[in-house]
Amino acid sequence: MEALISNYWWVLVALLCIVLYKYILRFLFGMVIVPEDRIGLITKKFVLLGSDRELPDGRIIAIRGEAGFQGKTLAPGLYFGMWFWQYSVTMEQFTIIPEGKIGLIMAKDGSEIPTGNILGQKVESDNFQDAVKFLENGGQRGRQTAYITSGSYRINTMLFQVSVTDMIRIQESMVGIVTTLDGLPIEANQIAGKLVEGHNNFQDFDAFIKMGGNRGLQPQVILAGSYNLNPWAIQLEEIPMTEIAIGYVGVVISFIGKEGDDLTGVDFKHGNIVAKGSKGVWLEPLGPGKYPINKYIMKVELVPTTNLVLNWASARSEAHNLDKNLSTITVRSRDGSRLIWT
Image (cartoon, rainbow, N blue to C red; front, side):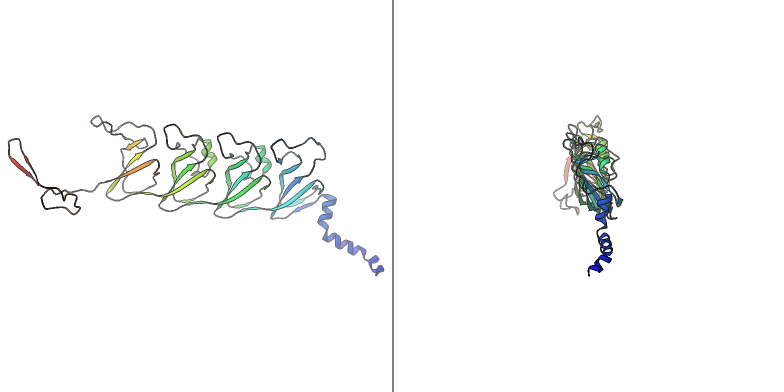
């Protein structure tokens, strides 16, 4: 038995090397293999040279070689120099956002969000896959305006926390009323923010902020469809569209806008009839149809436009019965003749 072991000891060593090759190569060369469906998160235990390289106060992610959680991650592949006594590498799965969902991002490190704002503004970071670039570009700590859509991402979870939520869907014949949670204060004497364009139905909230969008009720509504809306930035209320039936027009009363010129003329004072888009009663009514009206900033009064016949003869009434209490009217002309209106 001893002779057998002495002759074939190298076989046992070879088997051990095959089984433990990862640990041996890690010990000798600092080799790390990151699988195709994983990301390597690095923790640096200490700094060999430059012991004064410590993280700044308030920071938890290292981007310049300091000891601690590293912003740099390892993509799938083969790496050397990751000595086990200096580095700890944790394998994490990719962040998967399913179809019909979006990923909300909370940054655990970064600059302070400016006073008056509640969300961190977007900076270039390859959809939050480059933590170093996020921090170098001034990314802010806290909830982010930007989000990630359906797909697979290499997210450094030591810096970013991802929450998955549903896309917003507005049903047919419905309209979405928007209230924003961040932005500039609403102007004095107004109940809603000013109208701004170019934010793709509030899906690009950073564009909304950069163009001076206001915090609070918005005049713009969202029509039927599916939208990537950040619930940390936007609250949405879904209501039916305003319907004007045939035989009616809709007189619009707007509670927002600039004070318009009264268009009723010199013979009728205090009518407050204004042009479309101004505050007051619009001169131009809405015809029959469905309209995406924001009920909080506008009111629509239905006015009948059908011909209405009233019968003034006694004991007679039309089908609508609006004249059932009317009776013959007797008047006298200037010359005293007796006239009867029926």
